[in-house]
Image (cartoon, rainbow, N blue to C red; front, side, top):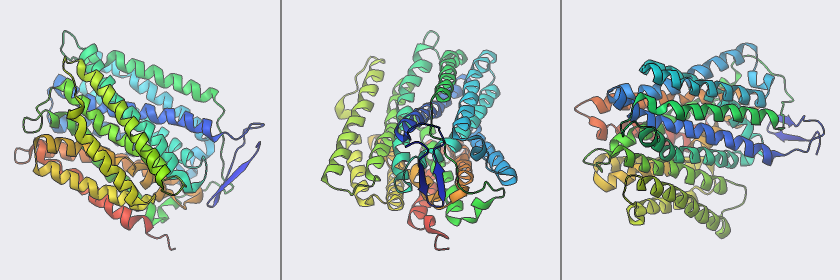
Length: 484
């Protein structure tokens, strides 16, 4: 209905697009495209790490500066946003979600274009600078898009919508190792050798895609929301303890997930694990990120309003199988490029972990906090198996963590901003600031991996610390201060 409104918590959100029917479905589809794009480019960092490590002859800690530069930008960008918000009012509330998204896309497009001169001059610091500005662009997208998705409907189903959008974000991270790995390590390799030039054309293509997405958003009529409360300056969001603890939860979630994903290709190459080559290791990286895709689609179904029953569970099973087949077919095609085939038997352990994931969703009973705690405890168990075993068992245990990372971002985010009212966008910027974990924790793991007394295998104790905190937040942290 034209000029309709929707009340959520203490906020009234108004559609002020004149003469237009409220169309949350179309807006959600457009937003989902953005989640896919930044998922794809974020996972390309996992391809860049072994690529740049090889080109510039780097150690593990030096190579992890890729993630450090990228995720440090999230922290700095969010900090600047918070300072502006605290001093003169929330910028997103002033310029609107749509303009914020367009700004993020333009910055991201320019940043991807910078990879061409970085490769031309063959300067590692130039690559890190381009990644930093790409992270700034993604910061703006995160601050604008996440709360926008959360208000496109009832607050009760915000976790479900975010899981759906994050599912397509994970689809981007799933196909990035397959497409990106093929482009960098094979198609644009010179006489079979990976050089600094291997990223020139791929990142120019990514740049063009971001600019086209900005044009698409500009031409699309999206619902425009505003609060019925005044935009106030000051750091009011920090008075909510569950938000402050949620910032730490985002820090450790992103830190744990990125630490693992950044180390997997090199981990798979270890003789004590699988001894794979680059062009085969990146295939199995897609199963790690693909697990997040499967789990997020299942989370969108599980955390929806309808009660868990046979139909709901049956839908979850069908979606899980369909998503697995997408991953397997993509991996099979990519694997065949090496002249070998990837048999169904070889990936069958992943199906067993998927079954455990479904049981864990049932145990979560569609409760965001409970599901977060259960998944964190399972990841702790999988990491312990990874640390104290080797070969196929450690290989699939660490890959399986992706399935249980799936719902963590959306569940933490919605639990942390619940009840913030007019401080929701400010709270969102603070939560995005927590993405600093993606800069710090992988770098710490890289330092551990470079130590002879620890090595890459044992360095996986670092993300264990992350999941211990996440278990706490799902059990108790999210309730802090809410009684007041």
